[in-house]
Image 1 (cartoon, rainbow, N blue to C red):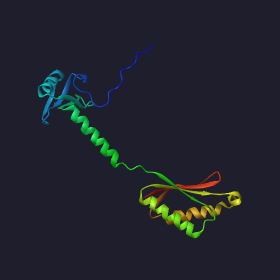
Image 2 (cartoon, helix red, strand yellow):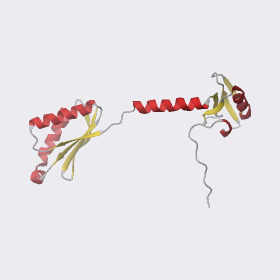
Image 3 (cartoon, rainbow, N blue to C red):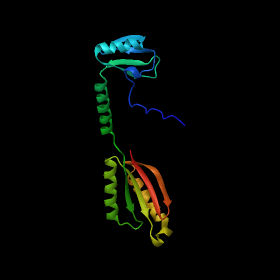
Image 4 (tube, rainbow, N blue to C red):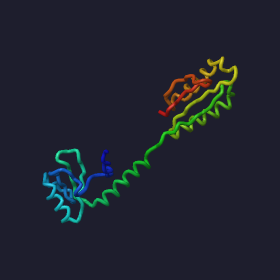
Length: 175
């Protein structure tokens, strides 16, 4: 029978959870006290009415700071939320073409491709062959090279045109 391990706590260790005997102490004003015993650091934090928080656990000795842990956690959550907000998720948009596409229809599709690149999305160009069109793959390849040439200033080819079953696929990514 294995004993069930205690669940790992999220975030830095605080107060009595700190396992080192000596710590590098920074007080609430940011003044470095140097290497002190853990019990001395805990008593200083208690006198200040704040918590002793392990900031850099991997250094020797670990760096601990005297601060309000609740306020510290709140600031960390705000920072993480701000980073998530600024993050852009790149989507893959798909444009479907046919080998016998007419000129105006092609222009409309290319306008959509340009808009996708301006939004920062990747574009997957799919050329589907139906029936006997599969015998004329060279027409499809020429169409995809035309798309590649027209979008050369806006995008780079991430996946060259290749056959996947009855369709030819090419992936473009914005520059």
